[in-house]
Structure formats: structure tokens, C-alpha cells
Length: 366
Image 1 (spheres, rainbow, N blue to C red):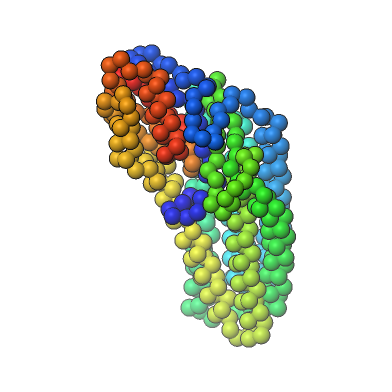
Image 2: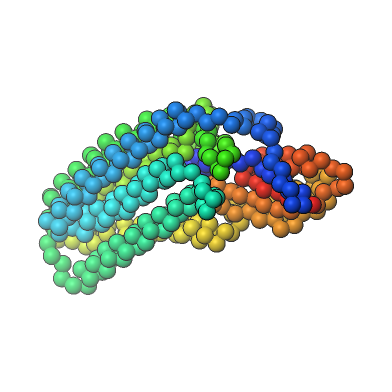
């Protein structure tokens, strides 16, 4: 969910803004001019979207299968070796499986059309799924920390260092395979792109913010690649954690009496897992409370709109997020007499797109 971190392709969605004069709502034409590099198209490339969706489903399904195999081996091996560190690694992988499943569900839900009762679509299901995943992390981490502290305070049973090392080595190999499998997509598909989404009967164009990790890429990628990008980072983190478990197993293999190392490893991994949920919790809270996103300075936004020719005043300005990266703006604008409503709307929309990457805009002209 960002707070100073490098953004990995944030999805931006655009909907043709509407202007209301009294009780009359006027939709802007599809030819609305935008910032340089943007093209508003009313014809979605459904074949390309289907191809990208199929690739994402294949990759995410493969990751889930790989992880379930590793979880099974590490759970059995961790119990037999009596190693909490191995079992904590398996538990962490289980939370990753939950996250991948949410991403897979998000890809599927992205095909759902908005309805009269769900006018914004079903994007917020991703937020609810992330909340459930976070609760699972809390539960598992709390149980592991409790077990580790209990073993520290009481006499420890022997840990089979050799078996612990072997199981961790298996997990390392499997994670390395997954890193290499996703590596090609991470290198060549972490770019900006376009995706079309149907909102009622209007065709919208979604564009992605270019990641600073890849300064120049062709605009051919879809929202599904964001899920693959996140999955790649998870797998790399899991690979590093597995190396830590391998080192712990090697230490206990060489020094069988150093059982405290296994417990310390468990405490460290569980604490790190809990700490990683804090940014996610803040993001979820902000979205569900419809708080103005942290990267939007509402005072500067208001001043910028007031500075547009033909705008006398602005009130009832609201900016919120439907889900991460999908921002919505609504406001009332008092225009100078005789000013064209369409011209004002065009300038305000262009300003919001170029300056704040807000693309879903509804404005009432008074």
C-alpha cells in the first residue's frame, strides 16, 4: 500500500468527466484533449487484454502451486526437525499464497462490469481481501511468537539441524526457480501501459504511472502486470528469508546446542512480517474512511483550480480513492458569466490529470 516508497506501476483510470449546469448533466466528448502522451480511445483492445489476463492467471496460479508444494514440505520437515524457524517460513509462505490468491481474484474481478448498484465496479474487493490477508498474518505471527517465547522460557527440545538445513535448501531452490520464472516479466513488463474498463455504458481509458525502476518502456502492458510485479517482489523477499533459515540450520547442524538461534530466527521473521502490515493497514484505513490520499495536497489543488480562467470559486471539493491508485474527484465550480462550461471543464480536467493524476472527475458548474 506507498509512504515514500518507489511506486511500482500505479494504475490510473480515466472516465469522461461530466459537467452539470443546474439539473442538466453534460458529458464531455471523447475528443477531450489531455496531457502530452495520452490518447483517449473508445475502442478497447479486448484481444490484448485477454492475452495479458491469461498470462497473469497462468503465472499467479503457477506461483500458488509452487508455494503449496514448498509449504507442505516445510511444514512436514519443520515438525520432524522440531524447528520453529522452518515452520515460520512455511507460515509466511502461506500468507503469500493468500496474497497471490487475492491478486488472482482481482484479475478475475477486473472483468466484472459495473452495475446500477455497484456504479464504481468491484475494485474495493481488493481492499477487503488485503484486510483479510493482513489478519491472517497477525494470527500466524502471534502464534509463532508465543511458541518461540514459550520455548525460550522452558527447556528446549532438540532441533535436527541437518534436516532443517535440507528443508530450507529445498525451499531456496524452489524460490530461486520462481524468481527466474518471473524474472523475465519483471524485467520486460514493468512499464507503463493502457487498459480499458467499462463504467456503465462509457468506455474509459486507464493508464499506468511509469515506474522509476524502468525509465523508458513501451506502452503495452496491463493492470495484471502490476500483480506480477508485486508477486516478483514477494518471491525475492521469500528467497532472502530462506537463506536466513538455511544459515540457521547450518549453525545448529554444526553446533547442536545452539538451539536459541532457531527461536531468535523465528522471532525476527515474525516481527518483520508484522511490521510489513503497518503501511498496508494505514492504506486500508485511508481508503475505507475515504480520506484524501496522502500524495494530494488539497489546498494546492483548490488553489490551482481557482487560478483557471473563468473560475470564480470552488466548493464541496472531494478527493478520495476507490482502491489503491484509482482516484476520484468531485466538486462544484462557480463560473464567470458567459464562460463556456465545456472549456472550463476541459481545463480543470487537464489540470487534474497532468498535475495530480486524477482521471475520474465529476464537476458541477454553477
